[in-house]
Image 1 (spheres, rainbow, N blue to C red):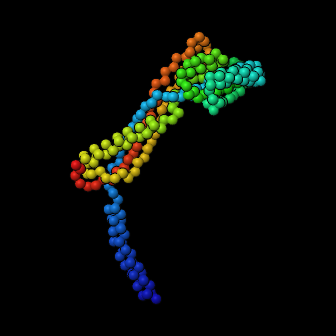
Image 2 (tube, rainbow, N blue to C red):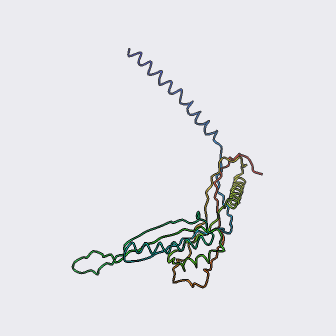
Image 3 (tube, rainbow, N blue to C red):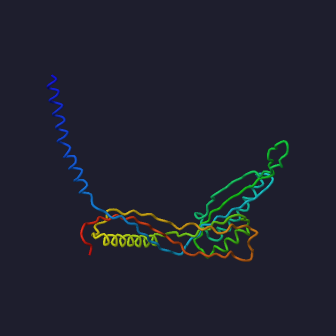
Length: 250
């Protein structure tokens, strides 16, 4: 019985030893099958004038009671909404983006006995986000909004309704830039550039540039607000992986 077990153990050991070269050979073959590659990044940028502005307009009212503050805020915002619609701004481009009612406190001066803060009134705020598709109306719209009671706001974002054509232009530039870099690397390394194995894209949209905070006392009711729209730059970054072939690049 013991002799039989020894024979089995020896046979198993021989099988393992015999299999090891096969495993090593398979691993070597896998390495040989993996193509040599070059990975590069390319950048592209295209600019376009904005055709739309996103504006936030906030009405803030204070009163002794929450009800009074809310009523005053509602009345002012109703007038602002009416003015927006009179300017032919569609309802789909008008959206309430924030609403709040909060108490206003006074904190007594410190003395020997700490005292609780006391409510002195309430503040109601209502924020309207407007998508304006006719930029020629922007200056006059801001002026009228302040005249009607908007006393807080800013964050005018100039954007594009459909930037797809500009983005595609930036994509082409990014791919061309990446291919040129890959060709330079291949030439310097003395190899030939092969087929594309992968392409990854990263899009960078224009960053919002908020305008100065606006308050009612800052505007002359007789003049529209001066506005400069500039251009929006769209940036695309691509990462491309090329197969390379050994040999002298032409």
